[in-house]
Amino acid sequence: MLVLVSPKDLSEALEAIEGGADIIDVKNPSEGSLGANFPWVIRDVANIAKKYRKEVSATTGDMPFKPGTASLAALGAAIAGADYIKVGLYGVKNELEAEEMIKAVVKAVKDYDDTKRVVIAGYGDFYRINSIDPLKLPSISAKHDADVVMVDTAIKDGTSIFDHMKIEDMRNFVRMAKENGLLCALAGNLSWNHIGTLKELSPDIIGVRTIVCESGRNSKIKRELVRKLKELVS
Image (cartoon, rainbow, N blue to C red; front, top):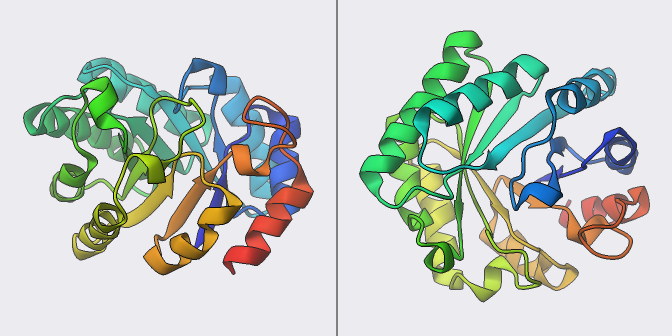
């Protein structure tokens, strides 16, 4: 499994890099689960990360159902230097809306640079925000040429993805992603106690922040914790 770590600024990105994270995922936790950071922060992190041969991901926000807004945000992240452009389908309520959003985002990114990867993120606690069930996303994402499908949690209240999705549903999510030729990512307040289960589920990527912070999601990422996580999942 690749380890994706989500820093909010350049100093945290350096901690993630030095700890051995595989993907540096620029986000802004103060703006939500997949809160978008500033283009200049993405650019600065990308410039440093690429010196270490690290790939960079960037979140574009917990998006409402606004395909134009989502596609413009995705293009901005791609131009700023992200290799993976991650869009959260927060305000997307059904399959028709998901198709429209995914199609627009993929076109915006791939028309600019078809080597960049589009990540479609759903939420394991979708029922709390009246959003689309993430189990519906692998087939739709593949149909419209996205590259990665991900599940996270929308509401950061201390609960984890395991509090909102059954293990069997998570297993099916991973299976459907792979059957559709997509990379699969799991995130959502993953803890040290989840490592064994994650290894059994075997997603391609795990996304973390809180577990590698010194004292909660809003504190600082520490390289020692990133290194520990890398060793445990290897």
